[in-house]
Length: 234
Image (tube, rainbow, N blue to C red):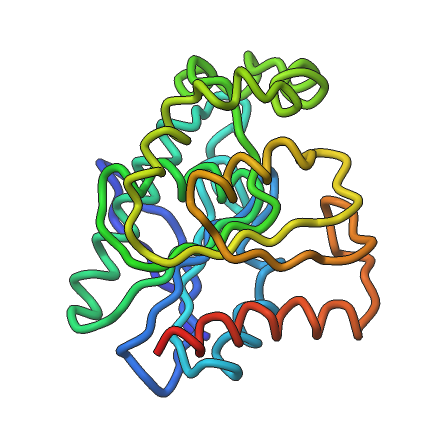
């Protein structure tokens, strides 16, 4: 693994690059809210081993060792950072096929990225969603209790979500990973993503939103499902 600072509109974000034997496959892994690239090392290494891909993971501003106060950041700012890192990958690996993999909040950002950049593979791990106006709010002003209790469970509100509507135009392949006992991202949300993407589905049995306490066998099955899905597309 090597560290890399990637320029991003007047500042930089810090990335870890896990080099695989093939530069024709690159996975951009988008972390969850309040997470950090440091916690994604095992997953990144498993994808390198399982697929030969290079994997890039980075900390959004306000995450990891970032000097920025997370509560002062906005999802729109994080999307800009995702775009900058994606463009860096395109320049650094011009012949590569890019898979964008987002976990929870990262899945939400991956959905938005599909509007601004072209890529042909998307993996959404327990993808979260937020009300459209929250995209421009500071994190401290987002009503997370209402988002969890109401918005993510309201099928009519989800059906009208502009980002989900745009994802109907995504022409690539997609995989949605559902955590069966998810207390943060309910079935109504993952079902909405699956429907608009016509996605393949992997169900992580008995798993809550965070899988940090999962057994080794469950983690292995989870990671193998990701690598196997990537491999079957080539």
